[in-house]
Image (tube, rainbow, N blue to C red; front, side, top):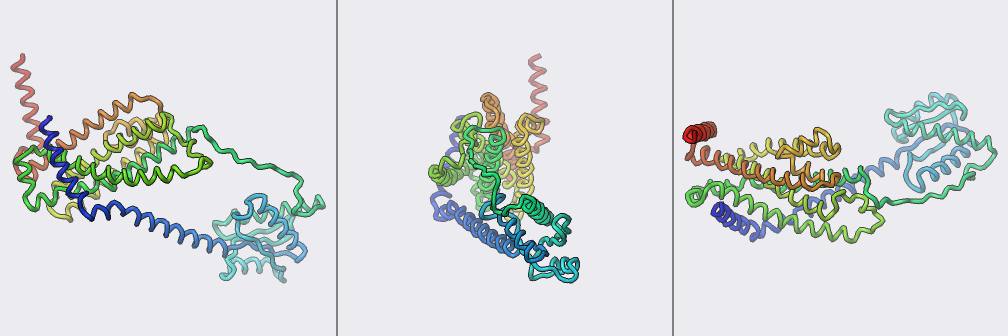
Length: 417
């Protein structure tokens, strides 16, 4: 075992330096800046588009000039009380009634230049409000304006005069709540999944170059294939650690300047933030090794880049299923789904990371890390065996190997008897 680990670390150092000590790694490290820029540009463009669409929409009231003046004053006061200076439903306009208010209402809703969402006509005590499909809230807002206008008339007061002077005070939670702890666990699952799916997927093509230039045959003749697979995983994990350390440092720098009034303290996990971060890092390592071992084992069977791309798709879909299972476990801690996700080896790292936000017990995490480490070894061994049998043509098939193992156990049991 010591020799296997030693050989694996030598291969890990070779792969790590071959990637990190190149100019292209800097582009890979800074690639999220491009993604962030695209996201910001898309968000700003979408915000301006939504704002432009919202500004062009309006509600209309068909009323006399006197009644329209009362309704506009009531709408202005009501909007300020409910939504403040900004926000709320589309602005309200008034038009004078024509000879046929019903036909006028239909025409206003159908006219393209106005973009009306709701039109109200008739007396305030029994108005008729027509609205575009999906804009029922705007119609209810017009009904509320009519109701408040009638109440104001009944009191004989101005619309902007308030009988009550409320004092609004904002309270920020500093004590973690159950829902926010679950949100913390879900956030950890999302971050871990994004990092593993982005970084571990590179393991698919790690053996492609060695297979094409016959280097893999030299490595296989020098060290066990298990050492080759283990070393390549460790090298890839080292590259991932450099990436995570760089962006994690930037994230910590950003969080250090966030004011306390934002209320990040209310998202603290029940197990404690330092221990939660430590466990999340350990589970990220396990998730990366498990997913990387699968990618490496499956990618080693491919003979071309087209096959590598085709093989990576089902693995990614499988990992998406594990992500959905882990998110369900984070949303319902203690349920049967959560227990299954915590036991199943390929969803266990994500589900157990989410459990750390809501469960203070420590011993399940120690047990889970050991269980996941066992499956990392099993996955590496299976991948190396299939590579030896399917690519190098120097071994026995999996079923024959299982039969030989059972036969050896039967013979050893007979001799012992």
